[in-house]
Length: 176
Image 1 (cartoon, one colour):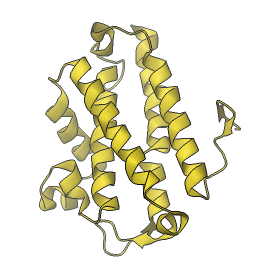
Image 2 (tube, rainbow, N blue to C red):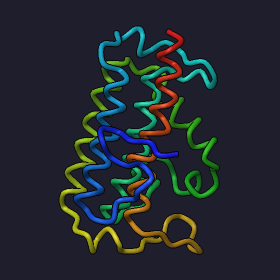
Image 3 (tube, helix red, strand yellow):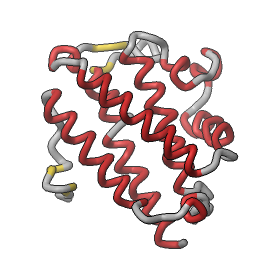
Image 4 (tube, rainbow, N blue to C red):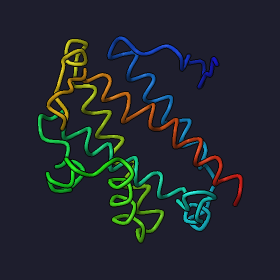
Protein backbone atom coordinates (compact mmCIF):
# COMPACT_ATOMS: atom_id res chain seq x y z
CA UNK A 1 0.00 0.00 0.00
CA UNK A 2 1.40 3.38 -0.96
CA UNK A 3 0.01 6.08 1.31
CA UNK A 4 0.89 9.75 1.12
CA UNK A 5 0.49 12.72 3.41
CA UNK A 6 0.81 16.03 1.60
CA UNK A 7 3.02 14.43 -1.03
CA UNK A 8 5.29 12.52 1.35
CA UNK A 9 5.69 8.80 0.65
CA UNK A 10 4.97 6.91 3.88
CA UNK A 11 6.63 3.72 2.67
CA UNK A 12 10.01 5.42 2.44
CA UNK A 13 11.85 5.76 5.73
CA UNK A 14 13.75 9.00 6.38
CA UNK A 15 17.52 8.68 6.14
CA UNK A 16 18.56 12.20 7.10
CA UNK A 17 17.63 14.76 9.72
CA UNK A 18 15.95 16.91 7.06
CA UNK A 19 13.84 13.98 5.82
CA UNK A 20 12.98 13.01 9.39
CA UNK A 21 11.90 16.53 10.33
CA UNK A 22 9.77 16.80 7.20
CA UNK A 23 8.11 13.47 7.94
CA UNK A 24 7.47 14.33 11.59
CA UNK A 25 6.01 17.72 10.73
CA UNK A 26 3.78 16.45 7.92
CA UNK A 27 2.45 13.64 10.04
CA UNK A 28 1.66 15.94 12.93
CA UNK A 29 -0.03 18.47 10.63
CA UNK A 30 -2.22 15.64 9.30
CA UNK A 31 -3.13 14.68 12.87
CA UNK A 32 -3.94 18.29 13.79
CA UNK A 33 -6.03 18.62 10.61
CA UNK A 34 -8.23 15.78 11.88
CA UNK A 35 -9.33 17.85 14.87
CA UNK A 36 -9.63 21.24 13.21
CA UNK A 37 -12.96 22.82 14.10
CA UNK A 38 -13.89 20.33 16.81
CA UNK A 39 -15.26 21.69 20.07
CA UNK A 40 -13.92 20.89 23.51
CA UNK A 41 -16.98 18.70 24.03
CA UNK A 42 -16.32 16.77 20.83
CA UNK A 43 -12.65 16.32 21.78
CA UNK A 44 -13.80 14.89 25.12
CA UNK A 45 -16.42 12.46 23.77
CA UNK A 46 -15.40 8.83 24.42
CA UNK A 47 -14.39 6.85 21.37
CA UNK A 48 -15.90 3.68 19.92
CA UNK A 49 -13.54 0.91 21.03
CA UNK A 50 -11.18 1.56 23.91
CA UNK A 51 -13.31 4.49 24.93
CA UNK A 52 -10.52 6.99 24.47
CA UNK A 53 -11.69 10.46 23.58
CA UNK A 54 -9.72 12.37 20.97
CA UNK A 55 -8.07 14.38 23.76
CA UNK A 56 -6.87 11.10 25.30
CA UNK A 57 -4.96 10.27 22.12
CA UNK A 58 -3.19 13.63 22.30
CA UNK A 59 -2.37 13.13 26.00
CA UNK A 60 -1.00 9.68 25.17
CA UNK A 61 1.22 11.05 22.41
CA UNK A 62 2.57 13.77 24.69
CA UNK A 63 3.42 11.21 27.37
CA UNK A 64 5.41 9.06 24.93
CA UNK A 65 7.09 12.14 23.49
CA UNK A 66 8.21 12.82 27.06
CA UNK A 67 9.85 9.41 27.15
CA UNK A 68 11.53 10.15 23.82
CA UNK A 69 12.83 13.50 25.10
CA UNK A 70 14.34 11.81 28.14
CA UNK A 71 16.13 9.27 25.94
CA UNK A 72 17.41 11.90 23.51
CA UNK A 73 18.75 13.93 26.44
CA UNK A 74 20.55 10.89 27.86
CA UNK A 75 18.13 10.16 30.69
CA UNK A 76 16.20 6.95 31.32
CA UNK A 77 12.87 6.63 29.54
CA UNK A 78 11.00 6.14 32.80
CA UNK A 79 11.90 9.69 33.83
CA UNK A 80 10.18 11.03 30.73
CA UNK A 81 7.11 8.91 31.39
CA UNK A 82 7.18 9.94 35.06
CA UNK A 83 6.96 6.39 36.37
CA UNK A 84 9.32 4.47 38.58
CA UNK A 85 12.05 2.29 37.14
CA UNK A 86 10.35 -0.90 38.37
CA UNK A 87 7.11 0.02 36.59
CA UNK A 88 9.00 0.93 33.43
CA UNK A 89 10.87 -2.39 33.48
CA UNK A 90 7.92 -4.62 34.32
CA UNK A 91 4.86 -3.07 32.70
CA UNK A 92 3.89 -4.24 29.25
CA UNK A 93 2.74 -1.63 26.75
CA UNK A 94 -0.97 -2.06 27.54
CA UNK A 95 -0.36 -1.64 31.27
CA UNK A 96 1.81 1.41 30.71
CA UNK A 97 -0.78 2.93 28.40
CA UNK A 98 -3.48 2.33 31.03
CA UNK A 99 -1.35 4.13 33.63
CA UNK A 100 -0.85 7.08 31.30
CA UNK A 101 -4.55 7.15 30.35
CA UNK A 102 -5.65 7.26 33.99
CA UNK A 103 -3.15 10.02 34.74
CA UNK A 104 -4.68 12.25 32.06
CA UNK A 105 -8.30 11.13 31.95
CA UNK A 106 -9.73 14.04 33.96
CA UNK A 107 -7.75 16.77 32.20
CA UNK A 108 -9.88 19.16 30.13
CA UNK A 109 -9.42 18.98 26.37
CA UNK A 110 -7.99 22.50 26.06
CA UNK A 111 -5.33 21.73 28.67
CA UNK A 112 -4.44 18.43 27.02
CA UNK A 113 -4.07 20.05 23.59
CA UNK A 114 -1.88 22.80 25.03
CA UNK A 115 0.36 20.21 26.71
CA UNK A 116 0.49 18.08 23.56
CA UNK A 117 1.38 21.02 21.36
CA UNK A 118 4.10 22.18 23.77
CA UNK A 119 5.47 18.64 23.86
CA UNK A 120 5.57 18.51 20.08
CA UNK A 121 7.43 21.84 19.95
CA UNK A 122 9.99 20.41 22.38
CA UNK A 123 10.39 17.38 20.12
CA UNK A 124 11.05 19.63 17.14
CA UNK A 125 13.55 21.75 19.08
CA UNK A 126 15.42 18.65 20.22
CA UNK A 127 15.45 17.16 16.73
CA UNK A 128 16.78 20.43 15.31
CA UNK A 129 19.79 20.09 17.64
CA UNK A 130 20.65 16.63 16.30
CA UNK A 131 22.65 15.86 13.20
CA UNK A 132 22.60 12.87 10.86
CA UNK A 133 25.34 11.16 12.84
CA UNK A 134 23.35 11.54 16.09
CA UNK A 135 20.37 9.85 14.46
CA UNK A 136 22.41 6.81 13.49
CA UNK A 137 23.86 6.38 16.98
CA UNK A 138 22.74 3.33 18.90
CA UNK A 139 21.23 3.53 22.32
CA UNK A 140 20.13 0.83 24.71
CA UNK A 141 16.50 0.98 25.84
CA UNK A 142 15.26 -0.63 29.05
CA UNK A 143 16.11 -4.12 27.78
CA UNK A 144 19.92 -4.39 27.96
CA UNK A 145 19.85 -7.08 25.26
CA UNK A 146 18.32 -4.65 22.78
CA UNK A 147 20.07 -1.86 20.93
CA UNK A 148 18.31 0.52 18.56
CA UNK A 149 19.29 3.51 16.49
CA UNK A 150 17.98 6.83 17.77
CA UNK A 151 16.22 7.50 14.47
CA UNK A 152 14.14 4.34 14.97
CA UNK A 153 13.10 5.41 18.45
CA UNK A 154 12.25 8.86 17.13
CA UNK A 155 10.17 7.38 14.29
CA UNK A 156 8.30 5.08 16.68
CA UNK A 157 7.44 7.94 19.04
CA UNK A 158 6.64 10.58 16.43
CA UNK A 159 5.33 10.05 12.92
CA UNK A 160 4.58 6.31 13.21
CA UNK A 161 2.77 6.96 16.46
CA UNK A 162 0.94 9.98 15.06
CA UNK A 163 -0.29 7.96 12.09
CA UNK A 164 -1.59 5.16 14.29
CA UNK A 165 -3.48 7.60 16.48
CA UNK A 166 -4.68 9.68 13.53
CA UNK A 167 -6.62 6.61 12.38
CA UNK A 168 -8.11 6.23 15.87
CA UNK A 169 -8.95 9.93 16.06
CA UNK A 170 -10.70 9.68 12.69
CA UNK A 171 -12.82 6.73 13.94
CA UNK A 172 -13.84 8.70 17.01
CA UNK A 173 -14.51 11.84 14.98
CA UNK A 174 -16.70 9.86 12.59
CA UNK A 175 -18.88 8.67 15.45
CA UNK A 176 -19.42 12.02 17.16
